[in-house]
Image (cartoon, rainbow, N blue to C red):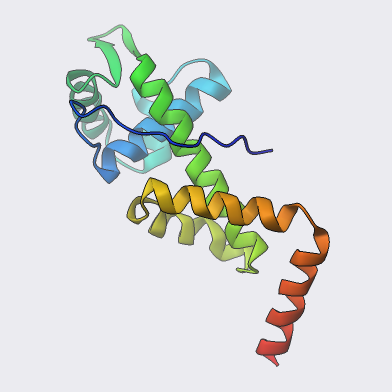
Amino acid sequence: MLHSIKNYSYEVSDSMPTPSMEDYIEQIHNLMESKGYARVSDIAEALLVHPSSVTKMVQKLDKDGYLNYEKYRGFILTPKGKKLGKRLVYRHELLEEFLEIIGVDIDKVYEDVEGIEHHLSWNSIDRIGDLVQYFKADDKRVNDLRNTIQINEE
């Protein structure tokens, strides 16, 4: 079940994270939620990058205030990093749910989400969230959409 985190915004002094930074923060957040910790090797494996690339990014995320990093000791997300991590996971899960509702083939959903998630504004994400809630509020709406899709595919 998704929990909406509406009206998320950065402080004016915050720098906007790059798509790559977002991918790392999202992965670190997911690992910490599932395992209680995130190691460089786990992140490298999940993101299909070299451990040295992870170390460089972890140092940058530390510098930008998203996590606290101590060489040879590990790292933890700061409150700023946790807040963003939750929002990034919400965005990812919401987009997966949206694409499933609108009938995207299940084997294409993850790839499509990865392709679009960094290109939508938070306002667009919130409106997609509203649309998902609209469809989920009444199964007839989803069924009507699926019938329309079926008719258009004939």
